[in-house]
Image 1 (spheres, rainbow, N blue to C red):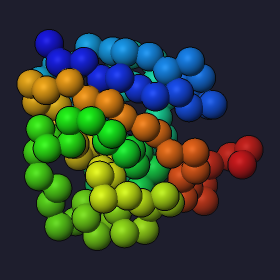
Image 2 (spheres, rainbow, N blue to C red):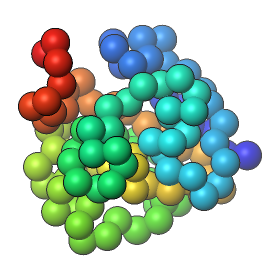
Image 3 (tube, rainbow, N blue to C red):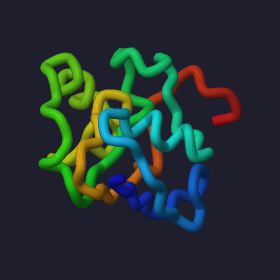
Image 4 (tube, helix red, strand yellow):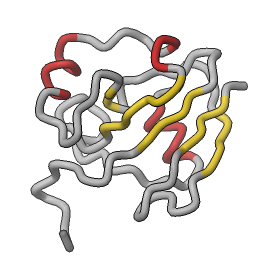
Length: 112
């Protein structure tokens, strides 16, 4: 089973962690199923950028981003060439290392 190394994030995963993910699930679902409450304001429908992650290792093992995802990523805070929306990035057989950006563009999030 592939592993996802989650780099430390002050709010969602302060110490960082390593989780196991089933092949064929989205990175977002894998994170959520292991208690990492990454934002997903559009309920994983590829309509926002709140679940944006930067894939530090294993990027090429993920499914190819569709045009809709790429268009949305252009609006993401901290966009990098290896950025993906975690709700659209599907885990394959290779291990991944991901970073959750410090900020998201979520105008509806309360308390921020």
